[in-house]
Length: 215
Ligand code: SF4
Image 1: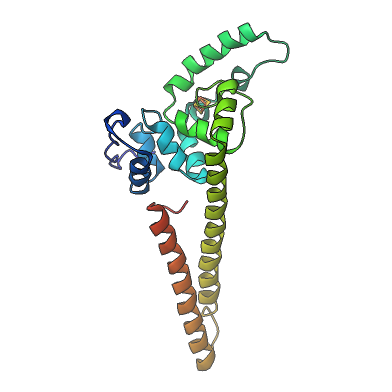
Image 2: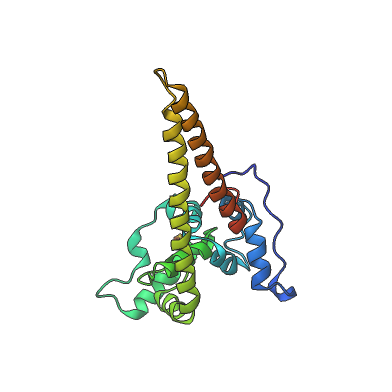
């Protein structure tokens, strides 16, 4: 975690009029995920709305700062046993949530990632499977749009990586040996074109997300 990075100012409390659009704008202008984690923004009052604005890679990065990742508790604590009564499971899961999720700095990101993955089998983000399932149904349209956006972002990322590789490949052709002047000039133009394409893709990504680190 980058503790040197200044945390962004907190969004205003929703009770004082913060809207989903305010949150989206705030997240788009924020520092990378580590700042949100360090500032406690993925566990606080607006954590759920902030997590909804993040793309899947950012959510996955956030959960590397979780209690589960750091402490690696017994995974069985998060799932109902086949022969376990509902009453026993309710007691046991309350203890799991108290002992782990309540102290987890990224519980909103954890729940959002579970919902994006359609994973409601165990406790995630401090929520019992029943609550996760209800949210999955209630937020179906939003989640479908979020998954489509995750997919679009992944495709764009592949295009950025391919463009960067093409620049490297072309630049590598200059290494070693003597190259005729006409081929050198052709290669120089190809590199300039590839660089422009790469930079346009990176700029478009930054304009659309506001994130300083490509996700
Ligand atoms: S919220 Fe709970 S289930 Fe999710 S990572 Fe944190 S401790 Fe684990």
